[in-house]
Amino acid sequence: MKNHKDQRLEKIAIDETLPHQIEAPSFKGTGIKMEPPFKNSQGVIIGDSYYASENSPLENWSDEVDPAIMAGDEWVHPTNDIGWNTTENKDLLEKKKKPQAYPFMHPTKDVSRGTD
View 1 (tube, helix red, strand yellow):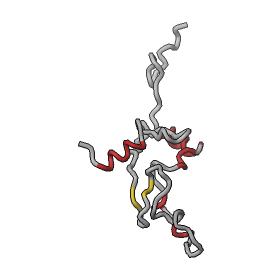
View 2: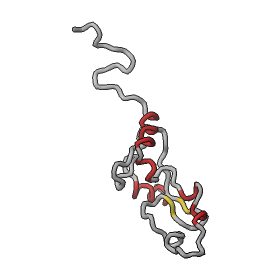
View 3: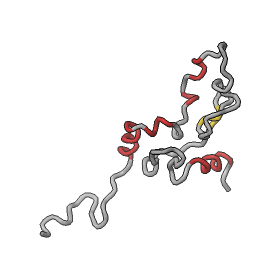
View 4: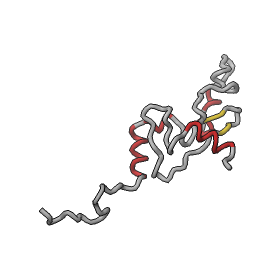
């Protein structure tokens, strides 16, 4: 039976990708496990893809709110973050994937050599 965290992750991720984000990279074959959303110290859910939270300083902004309160790792989700959609980060994921052999090809030997 799946736990609550697994069910929440399934709502946003399909086959190790984030289909609700245009140009979202696939984590499949990279060894990076997609992680479920989490609640940070401010009570804001990070990584649920709703981007608005009742407890968020952005939803309760005033002159007294110090923007530094929204700095740090607790505001960034490790796998459901818009930063993965950049070319540089997509390249990092591609480098983690094992090379795929083409059909009828040996992964380390050129079996067609000398056949023509």
